[in-house]
Amino acid sequence: MKKILPHFFSFPICEYMERKAVTLGHFQGTGIKMQGIGRLFVFLLMLSVLFHAASAVASSWTAEVIRVNDGDSITVKHDKRIVKVRLYGIDSPEIEQPYGRTSRSIVRQWLVGKRVKVEPMYRDSYGRTVAQVWAGDALVNAELVKNGAAWVYPRFCRERDICEPMARMQQNAQQARLGLWQNEKPEPPWQWKRKQRQQSRR
Image (cartoon, rainbow, N blue to C red; front, side, top):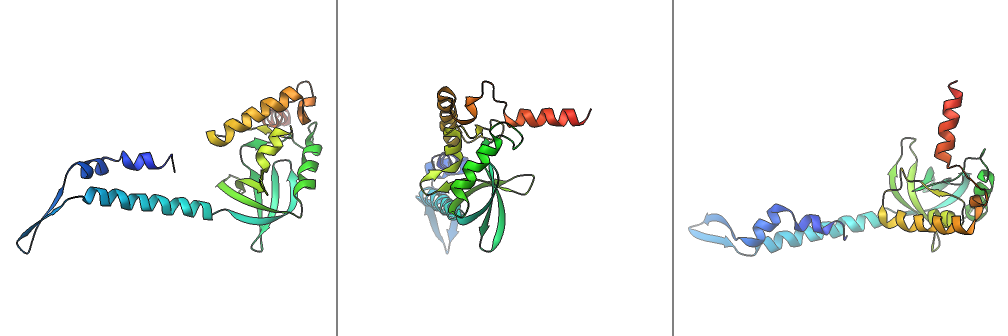
């Protein structure tokens, strides 16, 4: 809401209608001056913002985790549908990388058979729902970073209010040498995958 409302109140039409009365002309010989219509217009815009914000909250849904593909991807069952979910803003080690199987095992033991809340962000090019996932009061995305089971993914983690706290968690995990940070020079999975692709072309 804090991000949305300023855009509406800076909209030129709103400013104009707030400053001036709008004359609609004469109706049945009577001049009708719509004093205060600007405030009414802004009020209606506020209602629209609130409605869309409520819709966004309502778009989150609960599901049962039925499979963990790797440390940052799960499969859930929601309304009798099977949905693949990619955890927003993070990247866990690939299965073939050091700590990759451990990361998957952590998520598997934590979530399989449990109900989670899924807050969709968008759909990726693979058709997966990219989302924040909550297990009770714990944000799974952040907890994995906090405990050294995943990196913050700079290329795709763009929401500052989500990503900046996770970046601090990553620094703390690195300093404490938690999880994947026990390795002297852990390689981010996006770099590892790029090297694998380059080698396969040779």
